[in-house]
Length: 307
Image: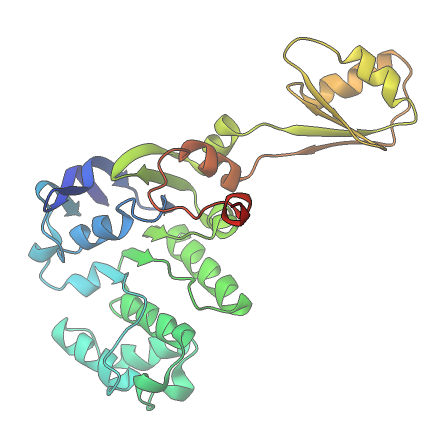
């Protein structure tokens, strides 16, 4: 388990992380979300002892990371986007890590095969694409077969096959009881794989909740109805608290459960050609929760084009 206890980090007069308290539990994938500049990477660096907290502490299995005797056997991390010196090969890079953490040398070829780099194990890293370096970084994180994984934007640079692969990898590690802590800006991917979410903005905790619960709480369900009697149904649905959006061939209903819409139509003999529900997305919930917390945002297209 990873425990963050009132964790804070100052860079001069700027507070990057402010009294962040959260737990990352085993047996699930915990997604770490927040706008650019929210403090996600700084938090991960403090977990790994790369940045010293200004106050508070980050614990890995109840001790600071620096106190782990062979850390790669407990926690594997990839947080910098690339891995290895350009002059090294994947094998020499991983072999040095294995030796320093008393990991059997046989693990080098095993993890290279796991991440799909076995055929380029003797090539220099300097010629690798971003996606290949991402895979190498993940190989390094897996080298000690750790019970905890910490990954910062692991899907950057990966193609469609690679994104499916990393999603399956994270899910498999959690399902076997591991602790997985991953940051990403790909909301659709996080929604598919994360059991739990931690959201921060401007260095402070916004929410920690199960993914489904957070989406349910902060988004609305939209009921779509198609019927040759839309006008009649719309008249019946004109009630306080119900929002209706009419299009040429359908009606969108917000604020009433699907079964209530169907029951009302049935009770009044209204023929239905479609009655469906669209659940909210993590992206919608995220945008609502982080509204006003965005530190760096582009001017809107309308504003950028105006004079």
